[in-house]
Amino acid sequence: MDKEHFEMLVDKAGPNGCCIWLGRTRNGYGSLQFCGSTEIASRVSWWLYKGSTNNLFVLHKCDNKICVNPEHLHLGNTGDNRDDWFEAGGKNHNAEKTHCKYGHLFSGDNLFLDNKGNRQCRECKNIRNREYKDKQKRLSV
Image (tube, rainbow, N blue to C red; front, side, top):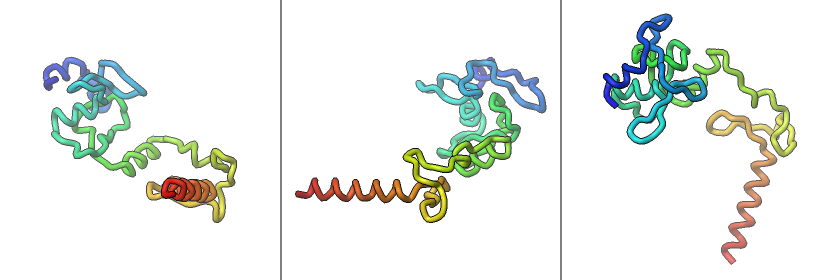
């Protein structure tokens, strides 16, 4: 797909300078077939008008999921994407949980943050580590 075909599916007269994707949507984002796979329209817009994303997220400055205006887009990492989501009113439902999915309490010494900043249950981690070590012992015999 080239810029000309892409622009046939864009309304450039959207509110606040947004260029609104008129094609298919998925989870509120523009969606299309591009180079043999389903892609998010804002990501394709970045590729067509700005170049490589270097495996980063394409984020919206305007908080409009169907905007494909390259001037309203910027690149960011996972943390930037999460921060944008919170600033736009996103809610972390996991933050409200008081127990892990196996019923262990999320508090005190049983709670730690993994390298991505997610809350983890220490008891579950210890169980997984013991199971892994037991499996390794059985395999080495």
